[in-house]
Image (cartoon, rainbow, N blue to C red; front, side, top):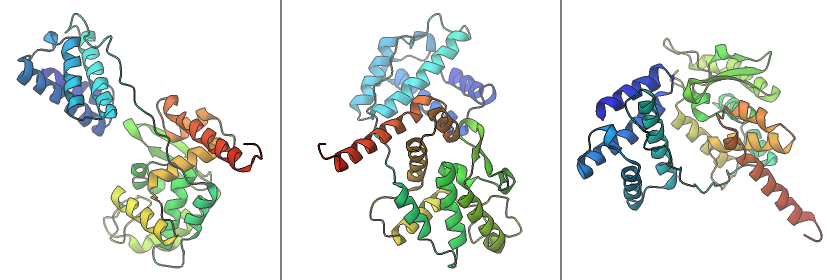
Length: 296
């Protein structure tokens, strides 16, 4: 089974162009399954795998305390693996054909309201060291709803402040264009013109956001910056970079943006992922109704 897994991962990399992280996650799921098949059932060939066997394995992982979301990832990995083998003629029948994905309780994402976002960003003193950089960083996170990894890898040549648009590469190495607001463009321009040059060293790349050592900011460092700025702004709740992405989407929706457009800007492959923000908006509307309607 290990040889088949190797061939499948090469297929994901070369034919499908899927990200390294996705390949690693899928390989881990499949390798763990293959190890269990060999140790627990003495099965080493994919053609000997049956649906009852897979169900036993998933029950084993569930008894071990694995969360439903993690089990779902395993099921997806097994489904695409055996579908690939069946398509290649290596199996007479796909044993995962009737296997269903576990139901996952969906939690509504946390968000900040518009006043809280303004409080967070406006609290940054641009006259202080790193103020211009951190202000620009938070402005872009909220203005374009970037993932933290997308922000870390954002490059100067991919930002057009005149057209107010940025090109980013997200999950699955998919590239998309996202509008950037006027305030974010102004903040980035001020940082690039007045502060970024001070960090540039001989080996500095063209990433927009740099550390004082001239290297690009890591995702961990961006996380720390957001937490620090939130603390200085007086927030006692947990503030983190993805919270600004959630807020970006929720505020667009509440102000009338089309869900499909939000999906495209966020880089979601499936509209169902974006639809969670409709529930957030409904919850917000209900809360407003309960607070202000005299007969609520």
